Structure formats: structure tokens, C-alpha cells
Image 1 (cartoon, rainbow, N blue to C red):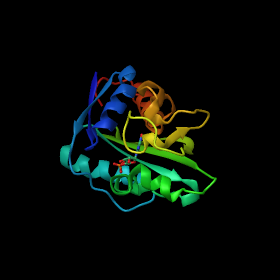
Image 2 (image 1 turned 90 degrees about the horizontal axis):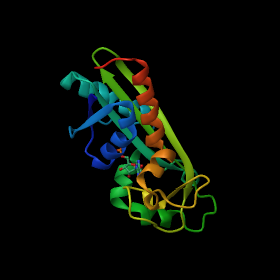
Image 3 (image 1 turned 60 degrees about the vertical axis):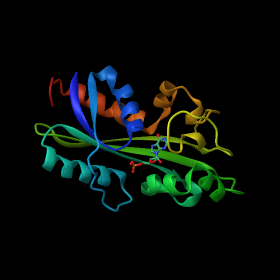
Image 4 (image 1 turned 90 degrees about the vertical axis):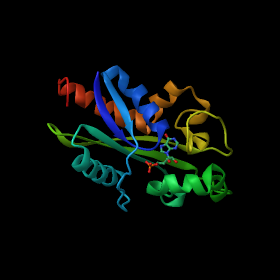
Length: 190
Ligand code: IMP
């Protein structure tokens, strides 16, 4: 097993990422450091900057993940502000903002920035297309899971078994891309 620090305060992200990465022989250790977050509408830039800042301090293999929900009819809001919006107005607040709107298209995006002394900095991305439901449904997962229905499905992320969410999710796509890239490097320790 390769062990990598995951700089985050969100244990749900760690649980999901470890589920997705275990077939690749990678184990993430949660490291609840304060993440240095720049103001940007690019999740990749935010994750990359935070990873490089953490690397200066920790000097061991680590990764940072930045993710968000982008709603089409709200011009991409809440996007990079998803965490703050979730804590303040929550799922119900988003449903109120969309009241009366027909277009409920949305996309979840995830950017992963990985750094190690031997491989340097690399980024990976994933997205999940879908729509915002008409009501809050389900109890699994976290954040906006109870109001997001991935394309071609009827259930929200919060109504699905975790492995089903992983198959459709932005985090699933980004961490699988990272896992197969790391496997292609064919190294025991990054
Ligand atoms: P950050 O990456 O720490 O800035 O936070 C991203 C925020 O986006 C989270 O706090 C959630 O509100 C939301 N989010 C990101 N990914 C997911 C997901 O898989 N399910 C539900 N909400 C998510």
C-alpha cells in the first residue's frame, strides 16, 4: 500500500477517496491542516496552489482536492463557494433559488492536485453532469448530495449506495484518473 497525506477537514471526502483508490493500492491519511485557499474560479488553480503550499511545509507525498457544484441557470453559482453556500443557505436555499426555473442542469466538478518529492506536482479532474432535484431526498453522503441527480438516473446521490455514487461522481472520475496515473508510474513509494 502506498500512503499519501490528504490535506482536508472533510472526512466524507477522505472516506470516498479511499474507497475509490483502494483497488489501486493507495491509502490516504487525513491531514486536517489549514488549506491555503486562493480566490479563483478555477478549482484546479485552487487545489494546485494549496498543494504546493502544503508541500513546502510537509515535504512528503500529499494531495489536495477542491470540488464544487455549478448550476447552469445561476451562471455556475455556487461553484468555488460551494462549501460556504452549503453551510449558510444549504440544500433548501438552493432549491429556493431555483423555484420556478425549468432549467435545473448542474455539474459537480472535482480537481485533485498531487505532489511528491520525486514526481512533482500533477493535477487530475472529474465531473458529473446532472440536475437539481425538486426536493431534498436521501440521507447518505454529504453536502449537496440530497439535491443532485446524475444524468440518466432518478435517485439523488444521497439515495444511492456509496459505490453507485462513486461510479457517477466527479470525485470518482478524478481519483480514478489519479489512481491509474500513479499505477502507470509503477513505483512502490512516490
Ligand atoms: P471544498 O472543496 O472544501 O471547497 O468544498 C466543496 C463543497 O462542495 C463541499 O463542502 C460540498 O458542499 C460541495 N460538494 C463537493 N463535492 C460534493 C459531493 O460529492 N457531494 C455533495 N456536495 C459536494
